[in-house]
Length: 150
Image (cartoon, rainbow, N blue to C red):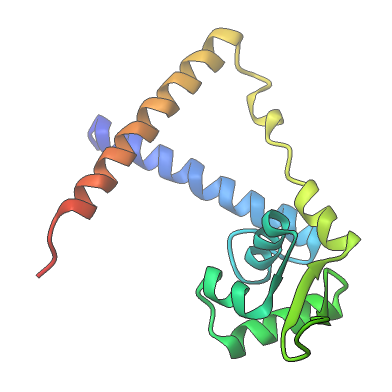
């Protein structure tokens, strides 16, 4: 295998392991709620917004009303959110985080253990390399977005 493919494979394997660890950690600590999908996405959005109407959440997260209703029901049943009727318009449901929902936002996996065997110089080099890779990925995404689709 050539060096480019080997490096790319190592990078992708590391990414895959990070995702698996993340899923394991959230599974153990929050019953599998992943902040990047489903119920976890809703909790992350509410953390930024503090409260929102059910309609606003559906629009922002691009989730159909029926699917959103099911996800919110699960979150409410597990104590992560509360829904209440608006004081001004009883048809509007306002969604807010509970104390348990706020904890979901505050607790995150600690990845610092990944770097304990690296020297200060290796950490600086890794950081610099990852920044370069991120810049390259952003450029590649811009090129992909600029290309016309037929």
